[in-house]
Amino acid sequence: MKDRKLPMWMLLIAVALCAALIGVVIWQGSRLRGMGMTAPALSAQTSSGETGASALSPKSISQLIKTFDLVPEGKDEAGETVTADVSLTLWDDQPDAAVTLLVTRGGSAASQTLTRNSSGVYSGSLTLPLSSQQDDQSIALSALVKGGGVYAQERLGDYPNALFMLASLRVDVKEGGMTYVRKALPAPGVGLMRINADCRVSVLDGSKPAEVKSASFRLYCNGERIKQLAAVEDESGQYLYGPQPWDNALVCQSGDEVSLTFACTGEDGLSYEFPLESTSITEHGGSVLPQSIPPIVS
Image 1 (cartoon, one colour):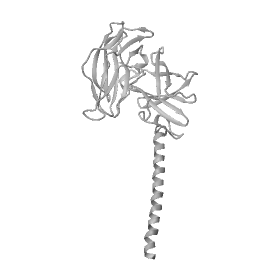
Image 2 (tube, one colour):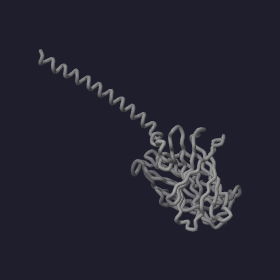
Image 3 (cartoon, helix red, strand yellow):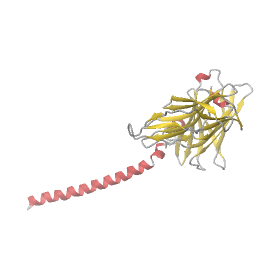
Image 4 (cartoon, one colour):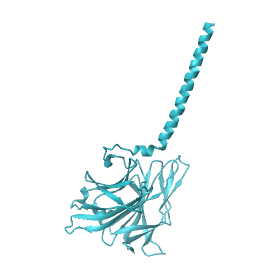
């Protein structure tokens, strides 16, 4: 009898261990699911001793900023510095959130705290030195948002020099520019990005329409210019520009970063390239989002 009871006890112990193991697996799975739901916030969190510039990779958290505007205020009397008023709004407006504009230039970093008004607009004044060697003074702008002990950072734009602080022109998008069409072939996650034939933009100098030259639409994939279409004036309105007809599109796949810009030369003799829209391609599609950042000026 003893020989028969021993396997039975072993069986009961094994069943108990299996039940405990299943419980642990269920608990761990629930915990992981919970972590997955809060991963964006947790990935942005930093200790109190970390600086904002190193808090988060720009691509770790995206689409924090709803609008960003930079209005040049001109040079100082000696022409050594240039000043602009900056303002931005958040997609997720939080009255207690603190927003800082980060400026990285030539390996050095500076920050500018923005003040929030009752309408949820964060604003401040930015002053940068003008260098005689503009090509050696690339500038990157980022916004750092702190709320509830969490830091999140979004890249606003990268510029070869400080000339964007002097931009007298701005672009007004009347109709959207890009449309993503997902295709089942040749492989999942592959699709076409098209520039809409009805895309229309106008260029403004202050509040007035401005005439520009050498206008074109440019399509980039992963930072490389892939397409450039000449822009022509629309018959329905002066200084309203749309792309010339075309019969092809950009083939893109999961992981690609695609962006559309409008380039032109103003009456001031400067060349402008305005970011219009961008998207990150995933296996399930590509949501096109507007870009509200200053133009690159050369």
